[in-house]
Length: 155
Image (tube, rainbow, N blue to C red):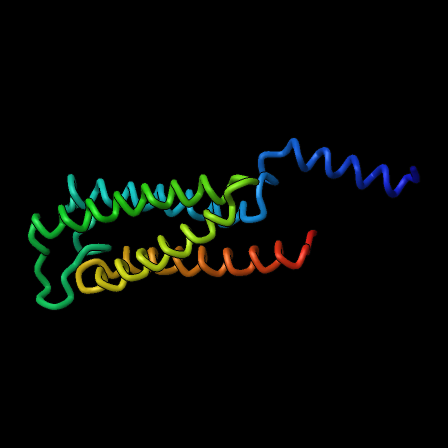
């Protein structure tokens, strides 16, 4: 075995030991994990302390008044559930065995997240914009990384 082949074998062994090379969609898994933390945090604050968000991230653009607590509770619960689905998607994306299921889960959760962000623009434009950016990033990463994995492209 030549030096180049030995270096390649050593690199593969190092990659297999690394947590960052457990599946072809690790970057998307990390973004899903960040989206989960964002969703949980925002959902909890929307339910339990919406006054902290008033005026900066939480404002009703249609009337200028704060939304009702009932509406905030519903939105907060939906955002927390969305956060849970991001965790499931991140787990599947990180897996060497189930990453393709994670791709489908990530795309579905991102579409739901984009729809939810679109609905939130009337009373939470800041949160909606941040959520939309994360969801577009997830879908873009999933599409790119899946395409690269299918073609066998490696760095």
